Image (cartoon, rainbow, N blue to C red; front, side, top):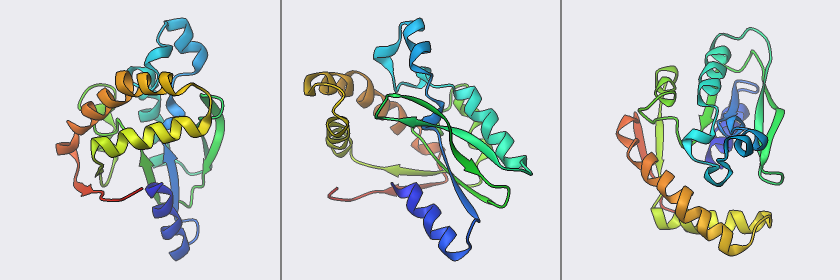
Length: 178
């Protein structure tokens, strides 16, 4: 993942100066999605705790002690508490996630917290093939279920996110075979 590589590179230059802050840990818990009847929508913007993510970013920006955050495990398809810790020495926070540049609440509160917003533009068909591969690697669901989920949730999410590209400070067109 590009965000990890950026953090690793920054930390190789100045150890401890950068930290990775994933948006994925702010998925709604699976039990909450079941209670809301929205499990089939998992991954769509409304299945995240977006306001909590915004508050977490605000807390990190003013933190003077270590702060732990949640992650997301594709092996169990749920949130994992305290999956990462950001030390107070980390002055560069690299976050990534599909909805960071959306113009609707609560996501619209993310961009003002960012010093630089970079949109990584990947062709739609490349995204589709990567999603099929990722879903297959976990082996939790049948190929037909994965295809249906990608077509019903992931690709409409791609289209929504693509519309947020003008809000970025920098757009990088990612051309890769992988």
